[in-house]
Image (tube, rainbow, N blue to C red; front, side, top):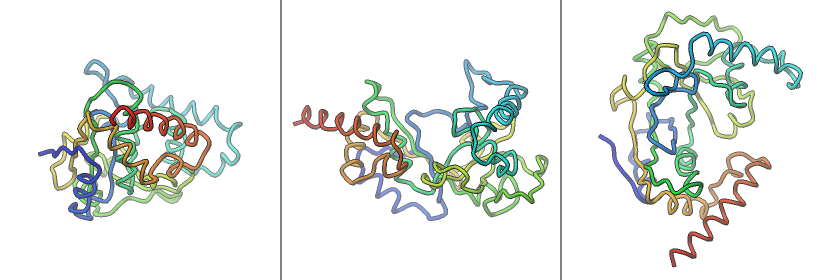
Length: 247
């Protein structure tokens, strides 16, 4: 059963009472199914075919070399997926983070971008239990160059970690759930000893985002780059305008 919160303090209380086994989380601006970008649905059907998903990655490999400083350092298809996903290519990887406050920021980040007051969500994941269920290994799977990946030794999505080859992956403390072509949404296949869902009241997203920024939790803090500086400048102005209206 899902809980709903309206304040940052309630979120912090939820996290404090959460078992440390739920070490990963993911924030979403809306209550979308937990599927990676390559497997998402459109009008009830998969948006991309298996062939298209394979072509995405192969075409990225072929066309990206001239723009990468060390393309030969990418060791396997998982690392290629990490690179491709960073630049918007649909893959079978779904981002999670070990930073629960980062997940909350992602959940409410679009609070000022529209008048949409849809509820946001944060999912909390127990990676060891998920991997025990689907891969019969009670640990996070580490991907390295020596790994011979066997697609037949598991029954659903499982958690992996790879080299931090992408600065953003490192900054957001990212790990990933790897899906296969026919996997269902994660929330449809697990129980609450593996996945917990916290709903963020849509009418309070702006207030929660304001509270996060007041504590110095912003996108420049997570991603120290110019695009984050620009995003924070605009968001801080939105927050000031919002606070004036509320007085």
